[in-house]
Image 1 (spheres, rainbow, N blue to C red):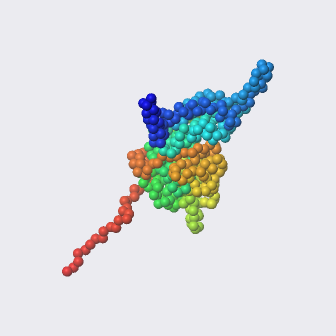
Image 2: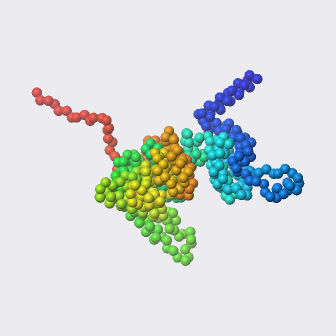
Image 3: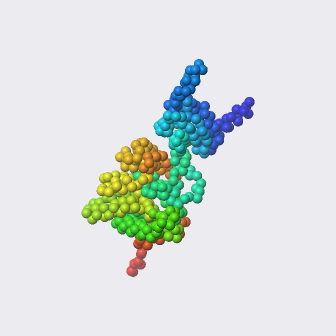
Length: 452
C-alpha cells in the first residue's frame, strides 16, 4: 500500500513538473485523456446550457403522444469525430435542422469555460458541419514553431496561432498587407522573421527603411535594393513602377491569344509564363510608412505625393507583375495626408501588434471586424510579438511570432546571399555594406616628438 502511494505521488509530481516546464508533454501524456473524458461526459449538459440544442420535431412529439411516452428531450448536435492533437482537441459536429454555425462561434467563450480548456475556435467546414478546434493550454506563452517543411513559393510560416496551427504569410493569396504596432510591440521581430523566411526563396527583397536603415541594413546581403531616406525611397518607388511596366510588356507579348490556343496557356500574370521568361517576384518591405508621408515644406509635399501615388499604383497593379507590399507603421490613418486611406484599402492582409489606443486598432480592423479591434487593444504588454491577424473577409485570429534575433536573421540572409537577383531598374539602389564604426571609443591621436 505504501508503494502504491509513493507511485501516485511520483506520478503527480511528474505531472506538475511537466505542466509547468513542458506543457506540450503534459498535454500528450495526461491532459488529453482528462480533456476527452470531460468533453464526452459534459457534452449534452454543455450544449443544453449554451443553447446549442434544438427542440424535438413534430413527428417525434406525435409518436410520443400516441405511444403515451414521455416528451422527448432536446437534441444536441451529433458528434462526427473527436480527434486529439499535440495542442488540443478537434471536435467535428453535425448540425441539427435549424441550427446555424454562427451560434457556435458566438458561444465559443462559454464552451471554453464549460469544457475547462484554454481556447475554443469554431469554423464551418461545409454546410451542416462545424468544427470546434479546442486548445488545451496556452500555446502562445512559449512559441515553438514545428519543423518547417518544404515551403511553397511566397508562403512563409511566420507565427503560431492560438489554436496551435501555424500562421503563414501567403503572398499568392494575400498580395499586400499592413502591419501596425506600437514601439516594443514585436513589429520589427515579425518583419525580421518574415525576411528570414523569404531569404531562402527565389524572390527579390526591396527595403525602404527611413530610420537610416538601422532595421534592414544588417540584412543587406539578401536585398536587391534598399532606400534609407525619403528622397531615395521616392526614386526607388519610381524605378519599381518602371519595372512593373516592363513586366507587363513581357506578359502582353506572351499572351498571343488565338482561337486554337488552349485556355491553360493564356496568362494575365507572371505565374502562367514559361519558366525561362517568368520574372522573379518582388517583396517590398516598408519599415515606417509615416516617415514617407510626413512633409514640412512644399518640396517635401511634392515628394510625399509622388511616394504615395507610386505606392498606390504598386498596390493596385503590382500583384499580376509579382510585386507585393508589406507596409509597417505605428499609425496608418487619414492624418498622414491625401491618398493614405486609398492605399490602406488596397492592403488586404492586416496584422496589429499591441497598440496604445483604440484608434490605432481601428485603422487596421475598423472596416473588417469590431471583435478584432477589441482583441488588438487587449494584447498584454508583457507578451511582445503577440498580434491579431486578419484579412478583408472578416476572419481573424491571435498569433505570436517566435523571437528571431537579429544575429539569426543576419546569418540566414548571409547564407542565402547568392539568391539575390539583379533587376536592372533597381541596380542604382543596390545596398552597399556599411563600414564598421567604433562607438564609444576614442581614437588615439598621432604623437610627435618634442624638440630639445
